[in-house]
Length: 188
Length: 184
Image (cartoon, rainbow over all chains, first blue to last red; front, side):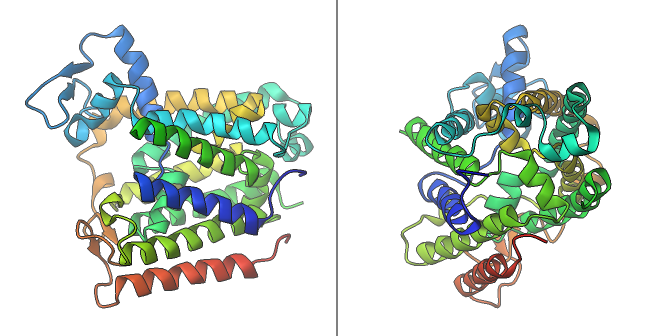
């Protein structure tokens, strides 16, 4: 597609973004912020989900076991949405918008509803596309949270650090994704 | 200062994902059904070059090894990876690319992100039930890296100098990226 970089230039740019993130702050990660976003909304409607507790390392505790794990660090970020990791993920959307405006690849109106490969296989049934993608989103985030990270945190940042978990994650992900993609979309 | 860095580094990463074509589910699906490997080559090259430079710059003290954050290895990493792979193949989105695809004006990405928020909530509410199960049985001791690079995390292969091993792996990744065919 016009505006899309080839693997070499694109890889350099992508590699630079991982490297700069770890050089200045910490490795990139995304999927935790879906939990934080849920927690922020939950916290608006509940007085008990996140509470201050000076005895805990992070200063916050939660009635939910997941938000309370790792010394309440998720609970702390829920209570303070203006933190590094959450702002980073919001800024990613702004960065993609900038790229798209400054000569990056632009999808057509049809592409914005469903990619061409979907339309060839399932026609222009966008309600089916939206429903399928919604459930795919549910499964992807359950998987990412069970794994403790996603494509960004495990595969890219993890393998960059030669972390064993990054390799295990990539193994699990591609072992499932390649046969499923071929089954659903065929090879031609 | 950290918020300023979050904005700059986040914009850079989102820009890179869009420019390399990762926000386009067509590219992801074609990569996974092994018909167009351009994106796979870009990702392998990105991992290879960033890993090589990271370990070289750490060895001369330019990058602080304290910034590394190695995740734990346990059964759930593989099981969760497979679940993610299933949805990734069908949708053509992963958590990061699905979110930034909103900036392309993609309507299906909106449904993906909505589903993602529901999935994350389901996991948050179920964690208490599964947290003591076999899914969290550690593999090779948990937080391990192949190469040494940090005092905090244990190397899996301590008999090979860390920088040498990491740079060698990085170079292999770059070579694979270079040699893989574009279209299959």
